[in-house]
Image 1 (cartoon, rainbow, N blue to C red):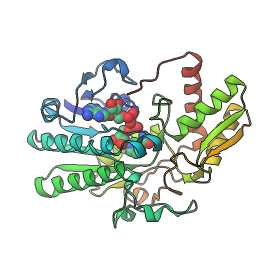
Image 2 (cartoon, rainbow, N blue to C red):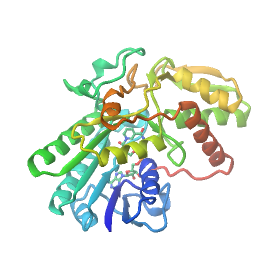
Image 3 (cartoon, rainbow, N blue to C red):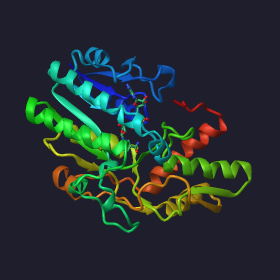
Image 4 (tube, protein in one colour):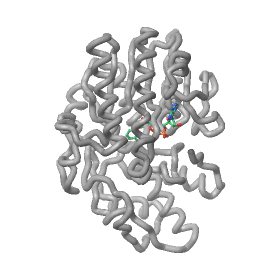
Length: 328
Ligand code: NAD
């Protein structure tokens, strides 16, 4: 029986990934996160769940013992507001990947997966809302998102060189905006889909039918539902693809269109206030899925409307039951 380690398992994607890995036969799962277990989004029975800080070398050495595969999803991150104001914290996640890679090498781990990000892409390729999808090659010449994006790009290179120099089988996916239930929806680390759903629900519940939007609402993005993310991550992990691969939806929408969909789900129309001083990120970003389709004969396909309905319903439940949302 092989043991799979999920680093960052107390977080949004990690919690869902553990749930999916539990469906496999003949595997043991070790889940690790620096948060106390009470703050994990999902704690699963039949999983060894450990609270440890993976920036520390000794913690990494301890948790990789006996492990054959590692999914590294642990990082200090959040939405645009968080990453623009916490560049040093985001860059310190480099310690997690460095120590995990070294520990993986020492322990002769078979496969290593690194969760990279669309934030590695060069700023010059994302200047207009109507840009074409980003190709994997658009990450160079390098000019990624300051702080968070540089850390991701550097850690991708480290994975590559551990493969080339030490023979570690390392796989990398560049996630494009992942959303879904059981993830941060308030407190400052939430991303656009959760924030917009929450604001629409707040407006409905309070009767104050207005919404605050960051930027002019014309900036474009694509959003990948969590089920596509966990499926694609496993496919990439078990593939022979050595280069970083886009893992994202190619259904590009503007933030205004995202609000339209959330309003439609909520059955409400809101007066929009645009906060032009708020962090808004690049003007346009979408995933080009040519390579993933060619390599895996698959690409994320869950429609934004369908995924957002499920996310909206879950956030609505959290709000009306006053459920806690860990703020860390
Ligand atoms: P998340 O914040 O919900 O989960 C990350 C988890 O890592 C958190 O639970 C956090 O406590 C944990 N962590 C942070 N530092 C740690 C440390 N030193 N030791 C152990 N655990 C630590 O974020 P997520 O959305 O689940 O993202 C997972 C991964 O995917 C991250 O690497 C992120 O950068 C990447 N990613 C996510 C998105 C997205 O849209 N959600 C997009 C691109 C990339």
